[in-house]
Structure formats: C-alpha cells, structure tokens
Image 1: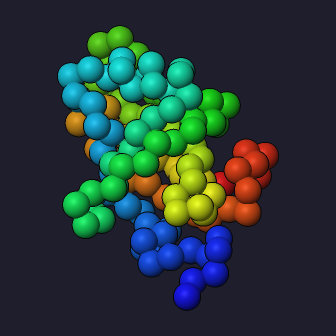
Image 2: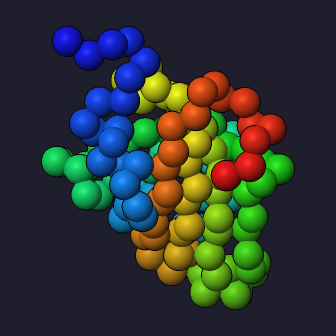
Amino acid sequence: MQKTNEPDDLIRRICDGDQPVQIPIPASAPRLLSEMISEGIMPVLFLATEGGMEIDLSVDKERTTIVGSGARYAEAGTEVIGYAILNEIPLRVRVWIDLSDMCGKATVEVVSSLDSSSEF
C-alpha cells in the first residue's frame, strides 16, 4: 500500500522529463490564454497520459512571461509557472506554449509545499 503523500506512478511519469501538453482553447483565440493567466487559473492537458489528463494550474503571475502582442502574438510563446495538487501531491509546473497552436511542453516537479518562493 502506498504511503500518503508519496508520488504514484502517474506523478513519477509526468515528472520524467519534458511532457507534451496542450492548452484546451482554440489557437485562433490567444487572448483567452492571457485572460486565464490574469485570472490565475490555466488548464493544461498532458497528452502523453492514457486518454490525456487535464490539470488546472494556479498561475504564478510574477514568474509567467507572455512574449509578443498584437499581430506578433500568434508567432510568439508563453512560459507559465504554476502549481497544482495531483493525487494529494503538490507540484510545480513550468509550461512553454507555442501560441500558434496552443501546444508545447511541460516540466513537472514534486515540491514539499505550494510555496512559490523557491526557484524552479
């Protein structure tokens, strides 16, 4: 039996290197991503899990970077740092999103708490 707060197989897999992800919004509407970041919650779909797994990140607005705006916005990318709890395990997630298709990669790590003061 697994101990409470011990990473399970799913968490170990998503913490193993870069993971392909997608933000579940239309690529034609990059401003929706900006709105989600401003509101502090962003859904992220992990594509390499069975059936895909979606988690909501609590966005660290101070560490999140939106590159590009206006006509250049769709040619740019966004790096989002956020936090989530999955199966009772606190996680820090760094997501790079290509704004042309809302796909990208994520790096996930288990943290002892959801304290945003530590570096990724």
